[in-house]
Image (cartoon, helix red, strand yellow):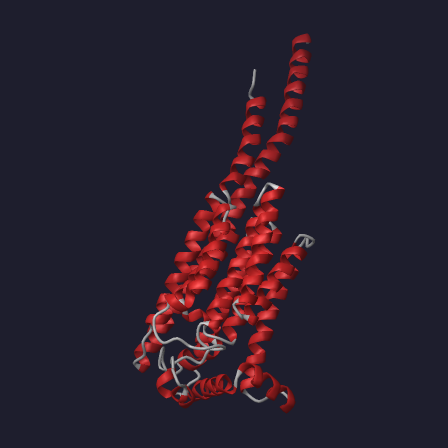
Length: 383
């Protein structure tokens, strides 16, 4: 009887230890399940991204075959985004602070050298390289702010924020008004993002901002706005740009399903032919997709942007990093809606790189989770 009671007490103590261990074990299981869930979500997001980018490439080939177009530009942009995204994911996992810092410096250097890097004729503002310069500076500020939020030391965070402010001032010095506005918006988002506990509202707001900018361009081209407001906006955008948009709308109405074919806008646009140095582009990514690849092309472009926002919403990185990257990419979307920034490989690769940085899973986070679990396992099975 005593042996049974002793055995019961032994089982009680073991059960107590098992119960306590279960508590600790459940914590360890939760920490183990958390990374598995995050990994599964990232895999789903990556699969969606591959599907969207693959559909963009495939649709450009289809429309090119139907209308004897040239899909090389779209294919190069898809390749640049994919390569930049993969590079950002890898470098962001290995060096989460140094990688965005290097990206910010690279973006600044490319913005300063952009007119001398791109082949072809040189254009004066507001067309030509002005949009690419503004886009690169915006992405550079976003990378610097992401690096500041990832930095562990206060002095390093201050230095990186000063770098972001310096890039913003550089935009003003270069005469890029749009770049200065978007860089300032990203800086303000960096300060405000630290006070946001839920990133969902921020991501929705960024999506609405991009949709509003795109809708405004369609309203201007379609003469939907009041006459006074339309004339004011045309004066800032230039009448030639608005004529390009109107030609793109006319082509989209002619063949809304397939468009006129990739890289064929310049051949069919009267406004493009009247330019002193024509580049064959409507200087708006949504209008170019609508004219050359129809409504499906526009939907694929929107799907690509929505995929990036969804990936930022589900990223394991902190909310400030996710929202800052989203703000910079939204600024790029606004610039691309009124310019040809996405025609530059450096811009598309930089956008993919920033998105990859913001969705990467730093290895140091896994190490910090694994170390306590190892200690718990050691304590639990220690004699």
